[in-house]
Length: 434
Image 1 (cartoon, rainbow, N blue to C red):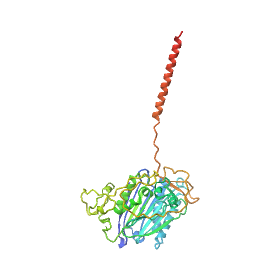
Image 2 (cartoon, rainbow, N blue to C red; image 1 turned 120 degrees about the vertical axis):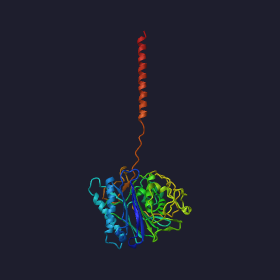
Image 3 (tube, helix red, strand yellow; image 1 turned 120 degrees about the horizontal axis):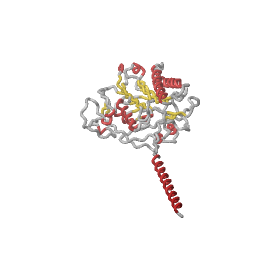
Image 4 (cartoon, rainbow, N blue to C red; image 1 turned 60 degrees about the vertical axis):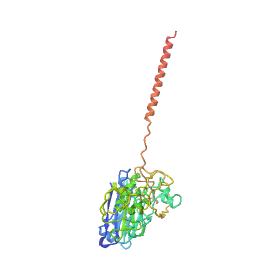
């Protein structure tokens, strides 16, 4: 089941107006969802006073412990941010809120059987006054989508990120490396944690995307850009989750999208020639995402998009949108030199992400296939901690051996009977001979 909500806000004439969509899904393999997402309701007075708080957390340590850790992290971070006295410095207030979430998760797991490896990633963002501030720990991500680029604001705290930073691995190799799920920093492992904080300017039309590795591990940045630029946030989150599930969905999938609107209710994307937003919003069901109707006058101007089927009945004043065709599925665990080419994606300038410089460590034991994460070290003794977040291993197929064994047994039985028959005949012949 997918959780989702969204809407517009214009409380007290505040700018910027924001439209939000969020969704989380268990995926196609796991039996429980250890991800948690949270977004303050747009009608809340706290949004107009302190900004819109949104967060994604990816829990670890086993089903119950991971779910509790991620839920506790987003809740404590939200309460700590809005309850902070540092209203004049939102960036510092958010950093302290994430630090308080770490302390809460550590306390919840300290000394408790089955929770000694309880932890979670956390990426939180606050949108306000044409700015976004981000507090981040782990390998969930925050992207900023501008007019023609998508930029990763956060830095992955992962083993492969450190290898890329050191020049020992390319980004393409990192996407398919078997150790891509090993993270080097998370909430709940120690009483304190280093929190990365970022800040960026927002303009009308900019989009903030927060997602867990269950999404960004299967969907490229170019595809995320294409979906959020052509679909409203509520439809974009559903389409992105569906795309990750279509590619196997080995992990829980979570995404939050916040789009900054201009002062006009009905904005037009004059550069591409088609409207992208309208107050007259009709939710699109999951089954209809691949059949979004397109405006004939604008179809040719949308880069990389195929011609739509125009035989559908005319709709109410809903803006026409071109369909989004998912790229061919790339297996998430097969190590190949480079991912499969993505078809029909718009040309995007992709700035190189800055990645952490923490020295990498090897992991001696393979991660447990039944957990999101597994740990090689004790809970708190010596940094940096290594957390192994892995998709569950495929169940080994039973190789048929019973058929061959039965055939061999039958042959041996025939040989025994044949030998007995020959021996009996020889005995009879010896008895008859004078």
